Length: 148
Ligand code: CA2
Image 1 (cartoon, protein in one colour):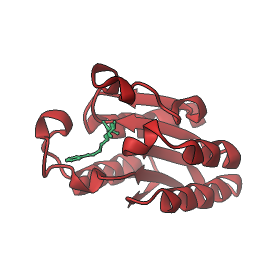
Image 2 (cartoon, rainbow, N blue to C red):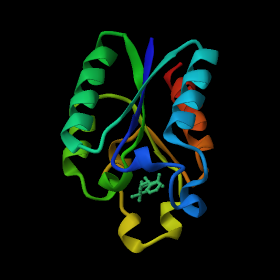
Image 3 (cartoon, rainbow, N blue to C red):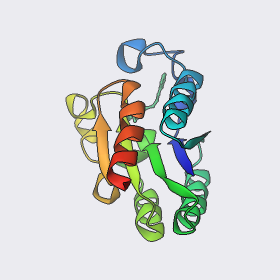
């Protein structure tokens, strides 16, 4: 049984710039943490990052189908800046019925007002915000807990 760990635009830059906002860990560190956490809970993490909205939508659709077939539990998703702009990601999650936990590394509510609105939160099963990369582990644990 798989868990999708999905990261959106610019998250491939983690650990290279803005450590005061996003910490010093790289995306590879996030993937290692998610792989380890999922395995400890009896699941297999599939980690994917894209800077392209359409590729994220395709992955959500594929996992919606896998969820219906009993092959995937759901997804942990940091949509990056698309959080604040993308009706298409909102529609993809709503349309395919994939359980999604939305994650943000930084506390978006303590930042610019344009980061305060999320198009993803209304269609997410839950959200984890502002806890650094620990949020990914907590989101996986939360997804498993609410799926039992
Ligand atoms: O806090 C988060 O996880 C965000 O989703 C990160 C996005 C931002 O647009 C959201 O408002 C909140 C930005 C991701 C870019 O990450 C970088 C990491 C290092 C250096 C540059 C960008």
